[in-house]
Length: 461
Image (tube, rainbow, N blue to C red; front, side):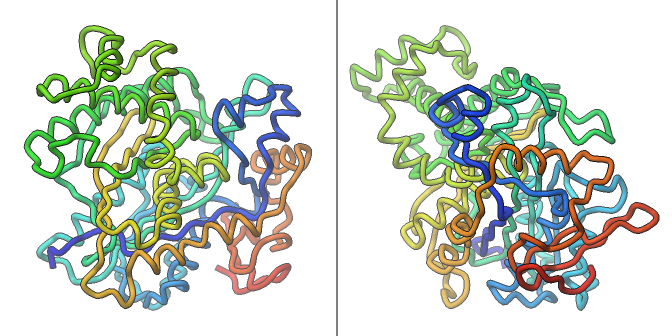
């Protein structure tokens, strides 16, 4: 049973509405800041008849349907979210309504900023690799709506919002195998992004400090990854053995900047090991600050040089995993695996034999780095990279979205923190198969229905 545990299937959901970042730039009078500066193209948005529960239900239901998964074959279920709508009842318990013929699923919600879905993945690998595993799948879900406070001082943060959900199915003989020998961890206590007010839907945050902590975590994890590389024949060439880099993405440009910091640390590591470097690369190392090279403080000039020198690597190794970030914004817990879904849809079976370096991050702080390798499973009739690429559903979902203007966008955001948080209680404007908040009962509990087709509802959930 301990055979190539990893990801069998992946599915993405993003709501049916979006706003172009250019529209936000024009409204905020910051031409080029969100597009050229942050690398963003669009932002997914929704009314308050969608929430973290409904999006989780939608993405899980679509994965089960697309892959024709017998619900009795799922034994473990983890849900990661920053947007829990009940301080006691878990989102995962709502998902049990999709498994009415299976009351033996174990698993609850996981919470730690944007990192929690990766914790669910690692826990699921423990489950599948256990000698007591009963052969049933694990399912891990990340679902969030990234909201920021109203007001001009929060406009830049608002541009990095977004919403969506990702579900991954875990089992053996997987086409995407997680190499846990490469797992590198960094954690510490920090307060750059918190949610201390229980009845307030917005975070308390410091954007610049968040960036600093993000870069610190990248440097610490990549340094420890390179330390592990010394004892691994496959990784003895450091980052040269990596074909792709997929990261949690607050916005696309920060991922590219993280990659060039990793590239600098890789050059420094190779120099320390006596490996031959070009004169150009030696000059880059000389510009790094003295002392601890795991501290990612580099000058703007050096960063700009590296963005140019490593442009071809960014285009080939980083950009393929940024579609969700560019088009939907930050999906918080689902961000990293939305990036993986972007890569899978882009590459398909060409991922076989390729190695993808994953960087998981959550403020507070928890981060990890590990390698996922594509392979051809022994049983290729059901779970394989070609099939996975076709069933991600991202391209089709993005093409079916409707554009909204700034006024509509602001009304959507306001609906999530209004005294009456439900937009209409109807499936109007939702895609077929989308779950939504149908009503609240007298005890303020939420109940959900499924839109079976445009403008009509299915059963109560």
